[in-house]
Length: 336
View (tube, rainbow, N blue to C red):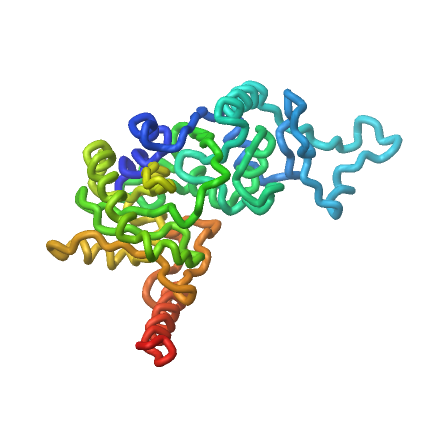
């Protein structure tokens, strides 16, 4: 994989060309001071001071056990250690406030490549829904997975010459409360041919997908042919789509082929083999029973940092799951 492939999958690179078929998004270049704030892991967890005074979040996420470290002793005067002041990014906050309002009052954030999915638990809703600058800062500052974007985006590149991109961007995407997780799919493109489609949310079984599978494959393949294949520059990549209730396809994201991109219901070796087999066509995989549900793979490190090769823990776990599914399918109770 080359650096160019990684760069072209940044949202600020691809979104302008695909905005008509994607989720409405507004993108802001981040000042370096805010990037440094996201990377700072020293001292107390401080949220930026709000200049609009509309946020209900406290300025600090406190740890009572550490509180005494920042107490000022009576009579100690200037010699006492003063608690650090929260950082402030007034220009960025005002721009983000305007964007949130123009996008209907709620957004979900992501950086150049990744969204802070691993920190959704810390929000009041347990989701990535944000209505203020402080909520966005809280999600970004709490996320371990965003360290990939900030520090390790090029680690898998054969021509690596950078440790990070020259600029970081914050993409604010319109929040749709009615989105159904089972209708998002990852598509795999090799040599400009669509070779695989996988259910994106592999941690759940959705019976309705069994009935709609054929129709979904048709609309996704048509979308790739009409909207993506002749426009996106790379030969090898993946892209995520969402299919609406009236069968319209919306582009969600692009990711490089391999490296830190999760293959979901495939293995990368399978996809490579599919490409090598002439006339193989598109393979569409969904979770077809409750016993085929996969474990959550929203890890806090890039996929290529995980031990997933032959003999690894993940490899053995997934093989055991596949064997158990095959056993249950062939059992008398299953009618096999």
